[in-house]
Length: 271
Image (cartoon, rainbow, N blue to C red; front, top):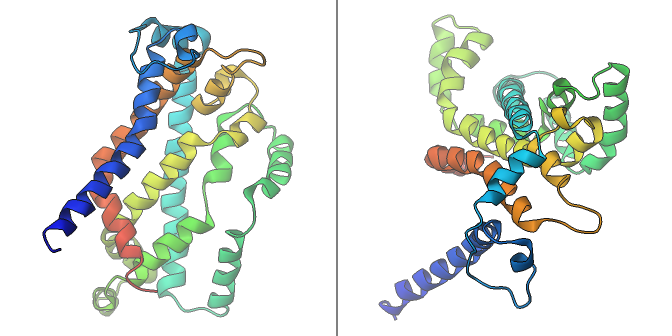
């Protein structure tokens, strides 16, 4: 039994990995087919090597502008949440002030509210500010999140208090302790939050479609959605565009996966 157990575990892991990779592999194969080949029944598992589908993406969409918009939106949201969520998380984890637990409970209650309920008031705010069809309209609402505060608070709670107390004995105030000591120690948690925010921002479709109707101001997710026609969709071109759009996020995750896993694991070490 002891010899069969590792084989069974590995078999389950291999099967699970294949199940996860299969949609991505099918996306790559479909992007290299003709429209008739992609919609054939039964479908063929072999590509037709139509590399011109990738060129069509740049012909049908202002791909460069939409890619830049997506990068700026994701970078702005990541920077904002790393800064603002870390400050709020440090206050909830380390500082003492009246009503801290009640206020933190209010923050957590936001996680139970469907984000669609905020669309109308956020749209009205963007409209009153004259920010429709602009980058700030898709960046500013994502600069802060209750989930980011919760994630980093759990990370700060797991850090040793002795380092913070030693800094206070040396005369460091709360801002200096937060910026010079706690923030560098929280790097795995910050990386984990950055990767999650980057993934959410890169895949965000609904909000960019609501506030930006100009194709030059759209993000990649909204631009790719425009490739779906009412009566017919060129699936090979759509798959090619989706594949190109997903490569930067895959590269970031592969590069930061070790710190991402450490950050997620550490957040659950202390409540």
